[in-house]
Amino acid sequence: MEVFSKEIMHIIMSNLSKERHIFCSEADFQFALANKIERYLEEKKVEKYNIFHEWCFEVPDKKNPEIFYKMYVDILVVINDKYYPIELKYKTKGNIKKDYKYLTYNDNNEMEYVLKNHVAYNLNCYSYVKDIDRLEQIKKHIRMVDCCYAIMLTNEPIYWIGPKEKSSYRDFVIKEYENKFDTKKYAIPRGKLLRWYNKSGNSISDGEIELDNSYEMDWRDYGTNLDDNRFNIKNNLENVRQFRYIISEIK
Image (cartoon, rainbow, N blue to C red; front, side):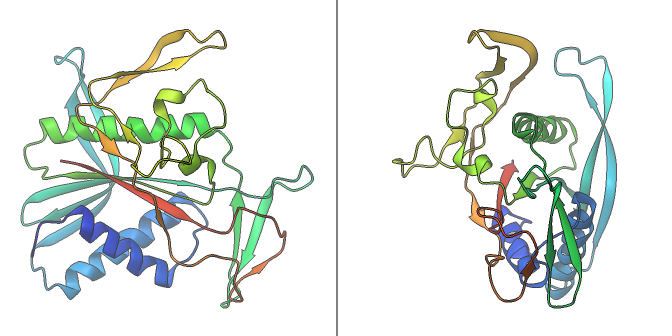
């Protein structure tokens, strides 16, 4: 089998979208993706593989290498003694009306999915970049690791569009383009100290991240738009139906 690459991850996500258009939680997404990876490996007749959930690595601290931390990853794929750690984020947009806390979907199997409002966009973007940072550390210090993947799946457009104004988390945005007129994909730069900013525009030292590599934000549609006849959307709102995802590969 060829290397367990980013292209293969896109194929697996495409295959998954044909069976599961929506998930009730991040854990649901995690187990469904792991199952789809296993089925893909079986179809490719890979003889020696294992898939683990919540695998733990011990990795030295960036600033103080004498201190080791436990780093957990959502999924660990092991193929022929090579490790492929995967970190996931599943952030949803529910009903934005004040008198509703959730958005409810029903599919043709009469399964009901209730989506929460994960509105902390700043923290969620930071967490995704932090996942990349953590995976870089794992790749650097665990010799069996071939490459790693950070994945976010969401139906909230602010992640791929970006905030309208200069924000406190502007260094951590994961938008698709610098602005709506660009055709070149936006990339989180390497070697830049990524920081938070206060209301005065001054940087804050807490939560700084510096990545070893740059990462292009290549967003893709996840399956079909949920605004079709296979779904009964109880609370009919705009801009909540199309899920998109991004994969960052840490080599």
